[in-house]
Structure formats: C-alpha cells, structure tokens
Image 1 (cartoon, rainbow, N blue to C red):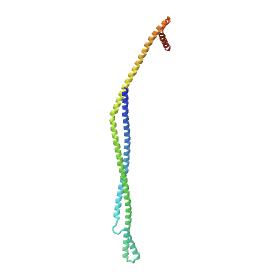
Image 2 (image 1 turned 90 degrees about the vertical axis):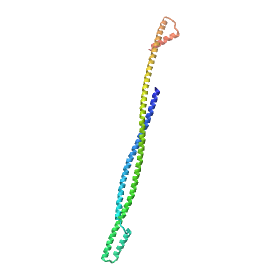
Image 3 (image 1 turned 180 degrees about the horizontal axis):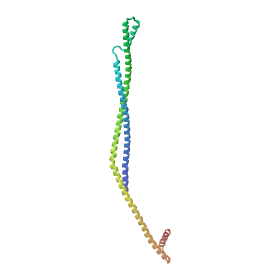
Length: 256
C-alpha cells in the first residue's frame, strides 16, 4: 500500500510539475504577445500620422507646381529680361526720344519688371518645391519604416499567440490526467489510512495480549512463590531456582 501511495504521489507531482511549467510558459508568451500588440498599436499610430503628414506635403507640392505653372512665362529667360531692362534703361538715359517713344519704352520696362518679379516668385517656388520633395522622401521613408516595424511586431504577436494556444491545448489535454492522478492519490491515501488503522488496531491487540500473557505468567509465579514461601517457613530446604522465584516475586511486589 505504501508503494501504491508513493507511486500516486510521484505521478501527481509529475503531472502538477508539467502543468506548472506549461502555465508559466503560457504567461510568458501572453506577456510577449501583449507587448508586441502594444508595439503594433504604437507604431500604427506613428505610421498613420506619418501618412497624414505625407498627404499634406503632397497636396502642398501640387499647389506649388500649380503656382509655378501659373507664374512661368514663355520667351525670354531671367537673364535676358534683366539685360533687356538694362538696355532700355540705358536708352532712356542716353537717347533723345520723342514722348511717345519714351512712353513706349517705360511701359515695356514696367512689363519686363513684372516678368522679373515673376521669375523671383518662381525661384522661391522651386526652392520650396525642392524642400517639399526632400521632406516627402524623408516622411515616406519614415512611414515605410513604421509599416515594416508594424509587420514585424504583428508577426511576432501572431507567433506568440499561436505558441500560447498550442500550450493551452496541451493543458486542456492534461485535465483528465490530473483528475485521474488526483483520484488515484485519494484512493491510495484511503487505502493507506485503512492499513494504518488496521496496523494500529493490531498493535493494540498485540499489546493487550502481551499484557494479559504477562499477567497470567505473573499470577502463576505469584502462586508458586507463595507456596514456596509457605514451605520455606515450615523449614523446608529450597533449591536455588526456587529461591530465585521467591526473590523475583518479592522484587516485583516491592516495586509495585
């Protein structure tokens, strides 16, 4: 019975240990999965913000391209316009012109200066366009990096969740085994208790039987000793063995 109880305890301890290890691993995987999910959420927010910023930059670039198209003029280049203005201005200062000719030149200079202002505007627009393109590329790369990170952590989360579910399935399969182990241990304990009770009962019986046997032996010895004492008082010579019986009886009586 002791062997059965020991085996049941060992089996229970083994199954319990497996369950404990599996639960610990499940908690570890759940924590990893949850951390990965938090990272996915955080990175998605950053990616979405980057995409919103990217759209705004692209819209701004379209506006700048439209302004460039509107301000761009055909014909003379900026350098040619400057030279033309200088030439006409020099002509005004150095030539004797009729009023109509002078008025015509002044008007042309005014138109050319407007063109020159348009060139300055276009230069600023091109500068802004260059800045926007660089910023768009930077934000695009940033959004792409966030997206790749989202995919990485999403994959990690999926892996940890899948592994966790496998372990949970193992735990569920262990439920009948742990129930069986508990049942076997309980039965072994009950049997051990029965055996223990029987052993205790038998010990008491043996003790009682021994006590009764001792008592019976003592009564016999007492009777024999009293007979021998009576004979000794009458003057009968006793053997050494008979004297020993009397001495044992007297010692017991004295100790009692």
